[in-house]
Image (cartoon, rainbow, N blue to C red; front, side, top):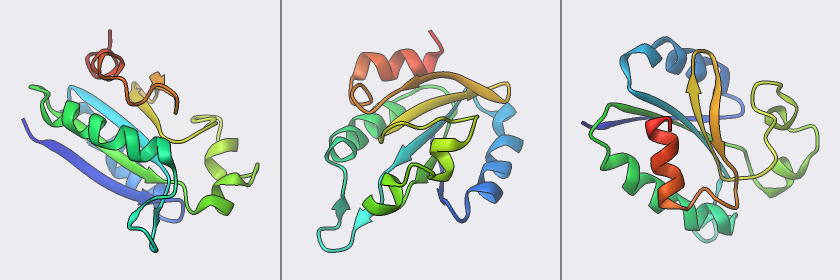
Length: 132
């Protein structure tokens, strides 16, 4: 089945997240991937962990036999992300500490997460997607 992808920035997140939540019941797995923005000077993420994890995550999700929805939430540039008051750091739903962070959204809450140091590990991505 095809992976359904939505993209959001801090500024557009609320509206995109509402749509993501309203369609969640249609999917076997609903995931949110918090990522660093792309650095225009390199066309790559400014975050080396994101550069490492993204291709692995996409490969695993695209190979999934189930309907998977992925909301990519871009945290901003490095100075924006480093602010301790970043909206997703202080949001009680997400309590973000690092990027990339991949979370499974289920029943209006986070039901599993992979932090920056483990978001590139295929077996952990598989476990998160299947909910095991």
